[in-house]
Image 1 (cartoon, rainbow, N blue to C red):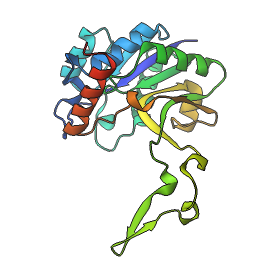
Image 2: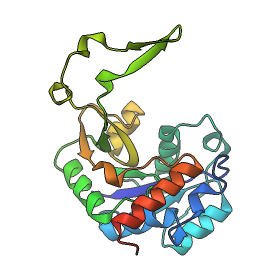
Image 3: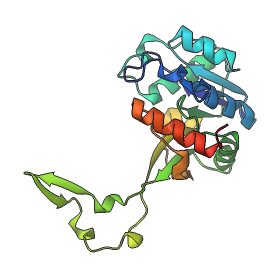
Image 4: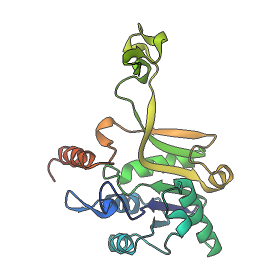
Length: 229
C-alpha cells in the first residue's frame, strides 16, 4: 500500500504575510508538518505542493520533496483543496507513480504529531475510505442565538430548555490532516467520502490560524503544551 503525504502550501497569504514559512516558536511553521509526516514512518513520500519557489526551498531544507510546482489553475483563490490534491495525484501518475492512499496535511498545523498521523493511518488501513481530524465544539451549537431586527432569538428554539449535557455532541474539521483512499477520492472529488471515520483531537491541540491574533494564541498554546521548549 503506497502512501504519500501532500502538504498544501500556496504562497501569497494576505492576512499573515508569508504565513506558511513564518517563524513559529523558533522554526518555519511548515517544518512542524513536514517533521511529523516524516517521523510517522507511514508515508513512502512526503511532498509539498506549492506555487512558491521560496516555500519550496524551505520545505526541501526540512526534508520534504517538491518534485513539481503547482499549475496556475491550482494557484488562484478559487482552487479548492480537492483540486490541488487531484492535480498532484494525476501528475505523479503521469510520471509513473501511483499511490493507494494519501494524507493531505496543512502547513499551518504545528500541533500535529507523528503519533497521531500513524494512528489515523491505521484507522484508514482498517477499512475506512477516509479519516479526518475533528474537534468537538466547546459550546453546543444547538444553543446558538441569531439576531433578527435587533432582537436576540434562539436559532433552534426546540433546544431552549434542554440541558447542555443532554445535547448531541457536534464536531468540526480542525484543519490538520485528512487521510483518503486515492481511488475513492478521485471518484468523489471530495475529502468527505462515504465511509469517513473521525480522528478526534482535544481542544488544546487545535487552533485556527487565520489572523495575527490566532497566531499569537497558537504560539501561547504550543509553549504551554511543550513546557516552554
